[in-house]
Length: 122
Image 1 (tube, helix red, strand yellow):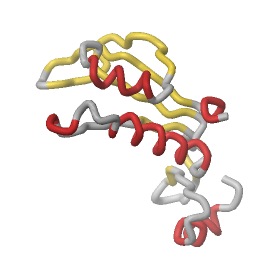
Image 2: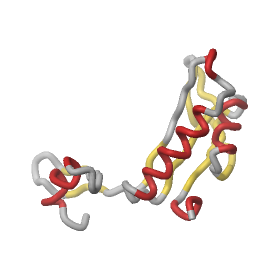
Image 3: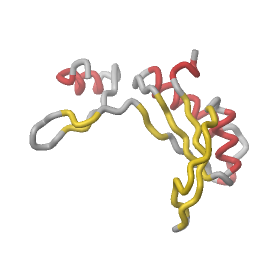
Image 4: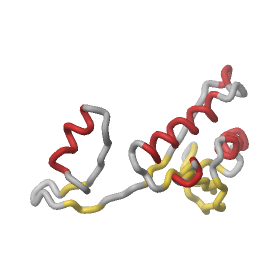
């Protein structure tokens, strides 16, 4: 990271949100990721209002522009057409089907993978 010493101040000031995994004993940075997964759920009596689509767009834009993420993934069950439609309406790019990727109701099911990257907001 550019400067971990300023990370707490930058977070408190809302200037930058830096995340690292640090070894608890040595203090050494183990790994740095610039991506995240984004999930959503809207109560059934509020579906169809565009709330989830708007939330995905705002959160993804914040993630890419403010948090400097390079990739945001949306992973949904292949038969969850409402969630897939939200991802598509939000501008996410369909990348493919991931076999046995998520567990729902005690069953491992295939999932559709969508992504957003900073270039999607230019």
